[in-house]
Each structure stands twice: as structure tokens, then as C-alpha cells.
Length: 282
Image (tube, rainbow, N blue to C red):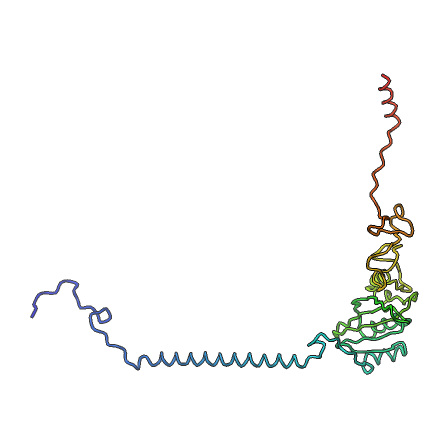
């Protein structure tokens, strides 16, 4: 028996600081953690299965959508025209303008109407006022040199904003035939009609300023016609009358091009010339 007195501060350590042996946790204490890990694994497996199923459904929907597309959207094949006689807009236009509406077709969902040349301004006015085609999107010319009648076409692109619908109008014209202007109905067609005249030679009757817009007046020819030579022609320039004859133009390598001229030498003033003479005599 040890009767030595305890030193000050030498008390027994508490059990949690090593003074007493700790009892190992029982299996029942690990059960909640194991159950929680099992639930987490099941949740991850379920989420993975749902993601796989979702991806598979999306792939099947995409394949079905591709199969439902018309041929011209799946392959580089031009869509075929469909008769649009029964379209409500075509029926309304024929009721208003009769035989001036020559034909109507649907192409890839867009409506195309062939209009008699003399009625194009009236048809555009009806479309703007009665059918909300208030936006003039574009106007262009087309040249078909192989046609016996109406080798030129003017194509008008109109847009109905509330219905999100586009409409294409076509007018045929022969060499020397003018088309009534639509610039008084849609001011946006003013410059576009001038461009069609400049590039194709199609004149628009009643246009407020039927002059060229890209090339100069006097240019010989219309560059977007199919029979215009790709190597260029003498143009008959009207903007350089001091350098060109009426039948010549600024064509590179033809020998008729403009060359910079040296500036004229200034003429001496009379007083200065007399003073120089007097100095020479002295």
C-alpha cells in the first residue's frame, strides 16, 4: 500500500482525457450512418437512371422531329410548289382584283402570287390597307434570257408583322416594257426600284426619280443581266467627258482610261515679269 501523499495538481484525469479506458461503440451506434449512406447511394442511382431515361426520350423526340421534316429540310432538294388557290388571302385578292391574280403557289410554307404587270400597285395597296402587309422587305429583278415572253421579273417581298407572315409577289415584263411604280405605296421601294433599273434596265412608270443609283448616267449596259459579258464592256462614261468619247469608258487595259494630267504651270504676273527684265538690264 502506497501511503505517499499526492502531489498538488496530480488529480486523476477525466475519462475523456485518457484517465480511464473508453468503451468501444456498439454496432447499434453505426446503424444510422450506414442507413444514411445507403439512402444516398439509392438516390444517386435513381438520379442517374432518370438522367439516362431523359436523354433517351430527348433523342427519340429529335429523331421523330427529323423524320417529320419535309424533304427540302432534310436533304438539299428544292421544295415542290403546291397550289394555293384555296388560301384565304388568295381568295380575297381574287375577289378584289379578279384576273389580275394570275396564279398562287406555296413553296416551303411561303406564299407566292403572280400578278399582272398593270395591277401590281393596286394589289400592293390592297395588301397594305386591307391585309396588314405594311412592311416592304425587299425588291429585286430577275433575268431569264431564254424566255420568249416576259424575260424579266420583278419580285416584291412583303411582310405582315401581326401574323408573322411573308408574301412574295412576282411581275413579268419584256424588253422595253415598264412596270408601274410601287414607291408611292411603300416608300421603302423607292431606292430598290432604282437599283432594279440600274442593274437590269427595268423601268418603273411613275417613279419620282427614275435614275441610276449605283452606276453613273451614261453607263453602257446593265451588269446583272445574264448576257452582260463578265469581262466588261466600254461603258460610255458621262462623268468624265473631258477624258472619254461618247462610245468609250473606264475599262482597264483598253487604252481609253483616264490618266492624271500634270497641273498647268502658273502664268507670271505682268509686274513681276517687268521687274525681272529691269534687273537683267542693270
